[in-house]
Length: 237
Image (cartoon, rainbow, N blue to C red; front, side, top):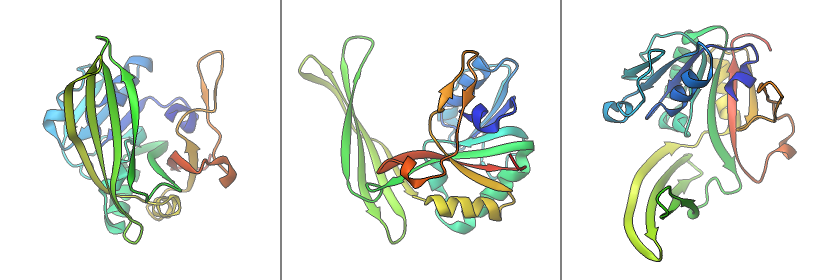
C-alpha cells in the first residue's frame, strides 16, 4: 500500500510509534534491498522486533530521530498520541525533514458515524492450537467536543466451551481522534505540498505484484464508518 501511494519504488521505510516493528520486518523481508528504521519509546516492546541487518530499531522520541526515509508511516492510529495541534504540527514538521526527495508521510485514522459512540464489537479468531480467541475492541469514552477518546482491547481464550484465559484491559489507549480536514491542514502547514486520502488497502494488484491505489475524491466512496490513510507528499504527484 505504501509503495502504491509513493508510486516510485521507495526503498527505505520509517515506522514511527513502531511497537514490535511488524511493518518494518515485513518491509525488509519483501522489498528487495529495502531498509527500515523503526522508532518507539518503549524499549521492551521494540525488543520483540525481529533482528535483520537492514532493519534499524531506535528506542526514543519520534520527534528526535534524524534518519532519512522514502516513506514514513504512523500506524495503529498512533497519530492520536499527539493531543494538541501544536504537538501535531511540530511532529509533522520534523517528519517532513526526514523525507528524501519525493518522499511521503502516511498515517491511518478512523471516523464516520460511530467515531464518537461508546460501545464494543467482538471478533473470533481461531488459534493454531485449536483454541478460540475472542478479541473485543471497546470504545469506552468519547468526547466530540475535545476529540479525545479512550479505547481498550480485551482477549478471552476458549478451549471448547471453557474459558482458559481472560485478559481484561490488555491494552488501553487514550488519544485525540483527529478529523480528516484537521490532518490535511496540519500536513500543509508543516511543509507538505499536497495531501490525499486512501482506503487502507490497495485498490488492485497487477500480475507482477505491483499495487495500485486511487485517492478518495468523493465522500460517497467512504463507508458510514471507515478506516483510511492520510498522506502528505513532498513533491507534486
